[in-house]
Each structure stands twice: as C-alpha cells, then as structure tokens.
Length: 483
Image 1 (cartoon, one colour):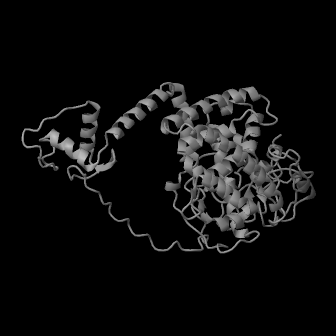
Image 2: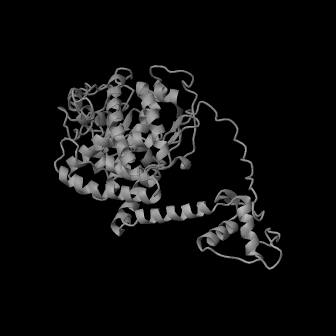
Image 3: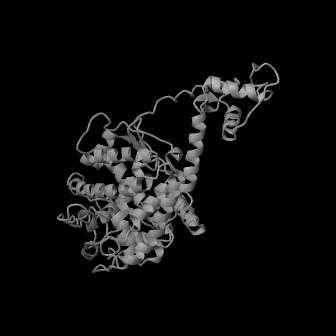
C-alpha cells in the first residue's frame, strides 16, 4: 500500500475461494465507514473498500469495475450479498452516526437571501378595560382578568352593588373598584352567558369521557421509550438544516441518475436507522432472530414512507430527508418515485389533519413493525402480545392529547392499511426501476424488496422479483444471505 495510506495486511486469496475468508482484513462495511471515519479510522486505500464482517474488497461497491480476481475468488462471490438485515442486527458498530451533511458540490442551487424577520405581533385591546387582550373569550376580545371575572360571576350567580351612580369608568386601573359596573360593561361589549355555560358543560363532558383513560405507569414508560427511540433515530423537521438542488427541477423525466444516487444513499441510511429504532423497542430483541428479520423486511418500506411523509411541507409542496435535502414533487418523481409520486404526496396530505407528534409517529411505526399477521412468523401469537400494549398506549395517548377528537385513533390505524397499499405499489415500482438504473440496486434496498409479503398484500397474484444475477464488476462478494 503506497502513498500516505496506513499500512494494512496484504489480503490472502486462497485458491478455490474459501467462502469464509476470501482475502480477509479486519475493517467495516461501506455503509458504516462514514461513522468510523468520524471516530478517527482511515479510509480504505484506493481500489479497495470495506466489506461486511470486516473484510477489505477490491473494486467499488457500486459503479467502479473491480480489478481481475482469481477464478476461485469469483466463484465465492456468486449469490452472496455484502450487507443484510442479519448483519445489521449482529453488528456491534450500529451506533448513532454524526450529523449528516450534504456532499461537497451537491448543492447545485442557492436557497437565496434569508427571509426578513416577521413583523411584530399586534395585540388587540380588551373591550372591557382596554388592557392587552389574550384572545377572544365568550364572544369578544378580552384580557385574562376580565375573562376570569366574567366566568366566575356567571358560574356563581354573583350579585353586585354599585356605591355610586352605576356609571363608573372601567379601565386597566379602575376595573377592580366596582364589580357591578365591570359586569355591566362585560354585557355591553357582548360577552355571552351561554358561552360560559356551554364551556362548563363541555369541560364536564370531557372530564367524564377521560375518566377511564389514564396512562398506567407501565404504559407511560412504554410511551416514553418508544418516543425516545423514534426521536433519536429520526430528527424532526425543525432540527434539520434544509438545502435544495436545481437538478431536474423544472420538468419530469424518466430518471435523473444524480438524484437517484443521492436518494438511494439516503434510503440505505434510513433503513439502518429503522433497524436501530426496532432494536430499541421494548421486547423486540426478545423475539427470535428469524422473526425480527421477518418483521423488519415486511414493515421497513411502510415505516420509510411514514417517516418521509411526516416531513411534508404543504406550502412549498416539498419533502425533506434526514440530511436536510429538500425535494419538490417533480424532483421526487425524477429521483425514482415515478408514478408513485402523486400517491405518496396525497398520503402526506392526508396525514396533516391528524397533526401527529413525535410520540404518535413513533407508536404508529412500532405498531406497523410489530404485527402478528405477517407471513412466515415463527411465533405470531407472541408478536401479537407484544403489539397489544402499543395499541393501548397509542389509544390513550391520542385520546388525552386531543380529547375532543375521539376519531383520531381509528383514523391513525386506517393509515397503516394505506401504508401497506403504498408499499405494494412501491415494490412494483422497484421492479421497473431496476431496468432503468445502471448497475444493481443497493443491497439493503434489494433485500427489503425481496420480501414476498409486500407483493401479496393487495393483489395476491404477483410474484417477488427474481434475484439479480451476480457480477464481479457490479457487486462485491460478502457474507451469506440471511435465511
């Protein structure tokens, strides 16, 4: 190894191609390499890259042809993936990555000068005493003091007396001197008795409705852990530094390869974060490894779609990814979504009225993932028992957060059905996309799409995509695929 690169052991290539160590050198996978560079580890030498299970492979994991390899070495590569879900689960190096930054040269368009600061808020005066109003209360603009005075007077049927001529001046300074004249002025400016009575009745009804909806200590802890798992693997829109690109922003094309490369890179990182989210869910890692992988492969596309749709900005009709990249509807189409684009944006628009917070999104993602009706589960009943407290936690949390909207919880569950339909369309889109891109699908995306369940959710007659033929120049050798 020449240049300034650190000396590394020379790979041993065994004649006949030993499947376990074809030129093995301790290292990390190409997807985890950025995380390790942030911790001071070097980049691999030119012409090499880090493979799974700590192996150093010749060539590029995606586009650059590999140099000639011995015959046995090529044979060992056939039919083997270099990164898979099982490898992610077993990896002790699956750590939270540093803040993602856009690649140099990626920002092709400037976002323009910063927007001017918003104008100062103008507060209306209280119609009763001319103090600063806090909003409309009982039909008129009023301050907190006059609102509370009027409410107490009506609820307690208070009778006041004026010691002067019943025409006292009521303002910010004198409002407490004569309660009789203050109440009369409340009526004069339009405050409504009925509004107070109706408000009291509504609060009583809400209190009665919530009588049995208390979060037990166990459910409260579950909500806390799921919410934290979601927040630590999926930054909110407000935490991201948005950036844009001018690439194919004006009109739709079949596929923009630059956008596709960026999207596939971000999608792979998102899959890794979803695996991390799953491993943090209470009870999930207690399932068998086979069931964990089955659930992840079945729900990964659902959660990907849910996450990106929660970052929809309707004013600009854009979606924002986890590194801050913000794409328009046209750019999403050109990045690979194609005919799926309008369906995804429509679903994002349907989520807006629900006003999901991070906790609700995390619980909904966990319910999508831990679902006992998935095909090929070894212990479906155990998965169902794990899902039941998640459903109850979402029901109670949503009810307490929006007590006057009891329909929100069933509406959220209906979104899971919508997500499965979109995932089926997404898998079908991936089949056509494979004929448009130069080279193979990224391995984690390909493995996710090999799940047969997403092809049988709706139609039931479709078949999963055939495995791509291995080629030494396109995909490197790696560990055996998980069963």
